[in-house]
Image (cartoon, rainbow, N blue to C red; front, top):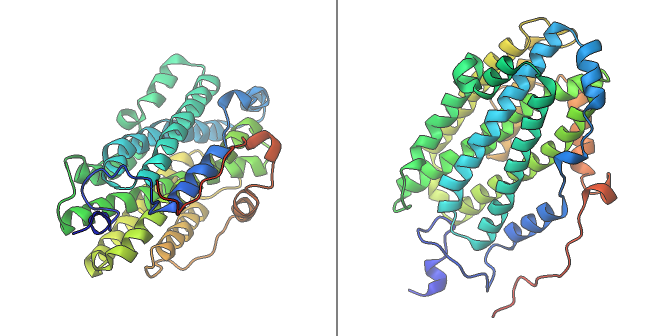
Length: 340
């Protein structure tokens, strides 16, 4: 068997270090695109936000914000842990590991952003401590964390991928993080931020969330590219059993996030209903099912015009908006087909 055939599958066990010839140039392109888009928390001005929190927001609005930031502060930590323990360990492509290294940096930056938000938005020390320990203190966030842990536990003990069953376990973990955690939990949270922005509130939070939104969209694109690569290499892994498990997983994620919406909106936020929020979650879930080549489950429209605008502005025009402030130049080109 040649070395090329031994490295034929992205999920072959081992730790391939060979970048020449480059087998997965798409992952390297994603890495370079991520490097070009670098931001820092220090660029964000929270002064107007603090004025809005004290003067323009109702108690129900402030409850929404505290729940939202508490989730963000724990959610990205869960993603970071899974990156190190699962994804970096088992995706056998040096180009993909380059991207994952960059993603880990971005997750740390997101955690810093939410840490800064909590320090600015929640001056009371006791309430701030409760927010940082949201998994223990807030049932709606604990439920989402337990959902995440169920799928991470499936692969945390996996020392190496040795069988098709191992590969399926890994794929379910990756699908969960791409479709449910980054693709649904975070997108639900983004909707609250952009709802507030549509009311002219919290421009600092909205500015930072724009950048996080871009990062998370790129993270999902990478994960789905991994799944599609494995689908091309080993299509037998994507059988009816896998489809049923993914559909059940996404349905459970919708229920978890809908329960979070019940908590977030429990004070009666003017202009945003629980029914609308659930419909938006169902709409997003169907989007993720389509990307996974699975039948849609809910078949509802997007109830939020402000999120349709966000999709257009922040994704379609990713590289055209705020280029000088957001993009960092990268020098040097790499030819993907060169040998040593």
